[in-house]
Length: 580
View 1 (cartoon, rainbow, N blue to C red):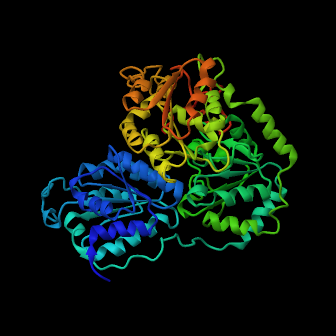
View 2 (cartoon, rainbow, N blue to C red; view 1 turned 120 degrees about the vertical axis):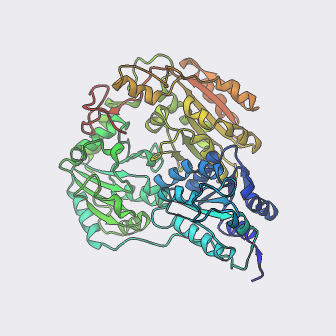
View 3 (cartoon, rainbow, N blue to C red; view 1 turned 60 degrees about the horizontal axis):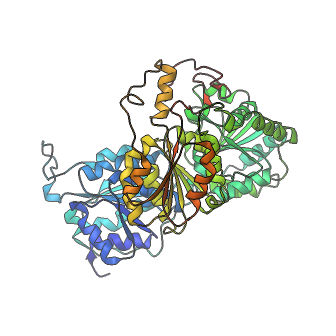
């Protein structure tokens, strides 16, 4: 093969992997890469206004497509600014490849006992290793083809996640004769055969009086959502979901129960507590799903757990019957089992779940809250006819995140993206940019953010306007950092330092107009219907709706720390101060 410039090879390789966009903020050590991408013209270069925004955008497109999202940054501060997004990809199993520019090899300190030799020289590989599947420096142009191939393979195989490549500037301008791959790199099948697991599973389901399926985020990251829906339908077993799996079952699916966990729908947690059998699919059963007492979570129920990550099973919740398997492979084998259509949950159990849902509606958790009820609003904004056009709802971190997970109505294959394990404010706006570009901006993407989190990456409004992206932005403005304010109310006698005291937010309607974006504010419940109609009136244009919510509104129900999954605030008080 004829030699080509290494940075040109990177551009060609990304195109061969079906990478649609590269997100970046320019800097000296990636100029060769940017120039090669520009000259090739096949992969869209999306310039963000902060490297953290680029990293979240890469996560957004990676989650939507299953193809690793790609973000680039220069050495030093550019590279370190990627780290929060890299960690988010790692904790939430999002496929991504991060490429950082590094100073020339002759400018690197090596074994010298100095802090830095080249300008902005920073050991990003050492920093990123704990939050990546792998991170390494490419030391020569000859190494580059194999390094890229390995990075993309690692990002998608097994439990997906991020990989980082650090490429010195002089390596980028060297020549390589590496062969380009003929086709995109796909994840190999993984897991172990366990035929007895399926016989045991269906035997337990058949004799269970109150069975449940818990759908976790691994179903989505394993590209198994459609198969999961088919399995639940064939089995006839009600399903609860974790925060990271809000979008697996459509809102109108008769077997969908609701979200469980620290801020889960009260009826879903009550159903989970009453169940006698639980099939856990792609969930690690972390503390926000089980509460602080895993023994109480398990109780007397039998738990079967399927996951691609062996380390996550029998971890906090023990004595589970486990199956180390890719979710897609599990569903294929389970759907082929002769008993799959013979284990439907008893009608009495399904009726009991429906009774609990009627008794404890999400819109009733904040009875008496002045002004707009956030749960009721989120039902309204997602049920509007125009909302069906949205490909995804991208939600930031805070109280609004929990209200959204409790109450958004998602239909068809609409996606729900949020920052789960990292829990980073500022996620939603840049991630929504990536999600929108997954189909080249052909469908609108909705954003739900709080006033605090939205300010963390507010600069990316300019990216939305410059790229003419149809984002529908909902800013739930309670004029405080609400989730921590609620924490201070519970544990610090209402001393609201840095959440209400010493905090402020701008008028986001005015901010949006400064970016030349149409915007509006609603503060009266009587104006909600008209405001929602306005937001969705033109699906092809960006718009921002600021929704004023009372500062004292809390996210309820909330698991009372130290109690079982069924004991939730405000009716039950925590036993101790939560640590998470």
